[in-house]
Length: 136
Image 1 (cartoon, rainbow, N blue to C red):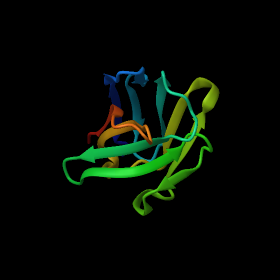
Image 2: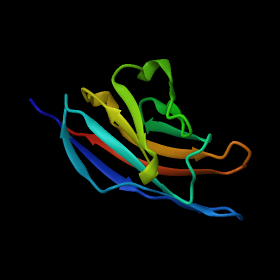
Image 3: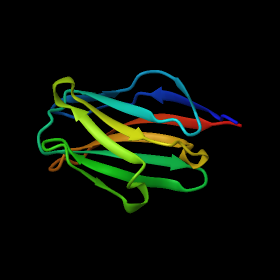
C-alpha cells in the first residue's frame, strides 16, 4: 500500500532595515511512503558565510520540532538526535540553496517544514514554510 505524500510551499518574505532576505521553494510534489524527498530552500540577499540556517517542522501531534542547524560557511550540520539517520543536509553555495533530504518517509513525517536563516548578530529571523502532508 502506498501512501501519497503531498508537498506544498508558501514563501514568507521579511525585510529588515539593511537588506531583504527572501527564501523560496518550488511548488507541490507527490511522494509515497518509503520514498525519499529533498526539500530546498533558496535564499536571496543572504551570503553563505558563517551564519546558520535551520530546518524546523511543526505537526499537530508533536508541535514544533527543531531538526538541524547548518553552518552555511562550512556546510556542517548539527542534528537533533531524533533526526539523525533518515535526515541529511547539503547545500549549493553557488546557487545559495540549502537542502534537507528525508529518506524512507513515514506517516509521522507529516508536518509543516520551516527553513529559517539566523543572523548571528541580528535580531530578526527570516523563515519559509513548506507543508508535508500524508494521506491514506
